[in-house]
Length: 192
Image (cartoon, rainbow, N blue to C red):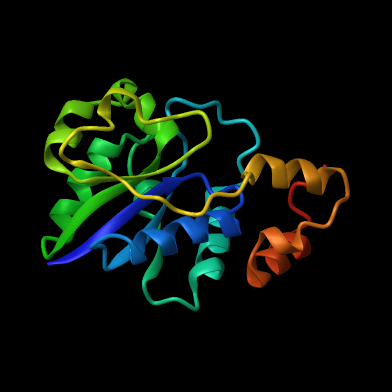
């Protein structure tokens, strides 16, 4: 069975930090691929300045097009909103019976994992690979047998930072892959 790491996010926009995390997970775990699951709405976050789903998906596709181990996944764009990870996992398990799915998340998300719908079920039935986020140690779930902490290079970069830099007219080309930067600038995203 191929092991697929699911990296959920709004990817608004996807940036090099996301790609470094995904690549590090591939190198330091038993995962065969990482799928970037573009989420329409995180039930624990405000919708705020999300680009249209198809634009965020297009940017993820452009970001990973040259790496066969990385894939854009639109499954949550076809499920009811708000999206819940436990339902996405059930849907993917039915659709891809030949694959074993696991989760990729930051230690900040693991700290608040008990706020997720059916988190106990996820914790008992899926492996969770966790990358460090400053100020978060994973909390009470860090020592669970299905949780593996993976040391990956971290950068103090975020999608919200990139959006604010674009609004201020700053050059963000080195925080994005070239195809994503080209798409984003041609569409004039986040400028106002």
